[in-house]
Image (cartoon, rainbow, N blue to C red; front, top):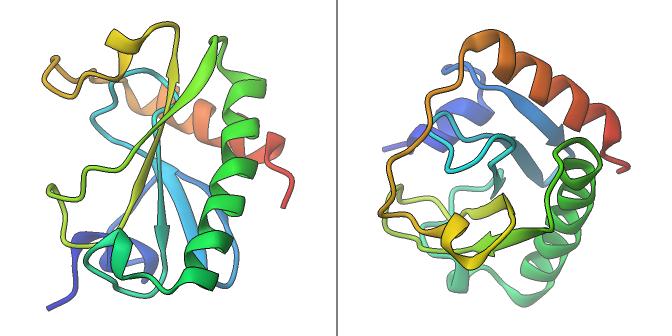
Length: 132
């Protein structure tokens, strides 16, 4: 059965796309910890990040790095935090989260609800700032 992320890649479920190439897809988290919180996934459905072969995992991190630079160009923050939890959706993914402190990346905190216009604006601006 396809994961929700595979359905997003296939265009069956809408998303706020930030970046895409032949192998990877990045989109805004719809329940972000901070504005600009982005998910990076491989287009291939792989359940666990450490099941990704070494070459593809390296390429995924390079892709995520480019997306992180795009986020940081748009969203004022100290750094882009990186988190891999791997339990929420059975599809490998990396969270890129604009942070000012360690507490900004605490997943037990209440998630934000940004309106559609803000999500569209963020996705568009970050996408324009990502240099693939």
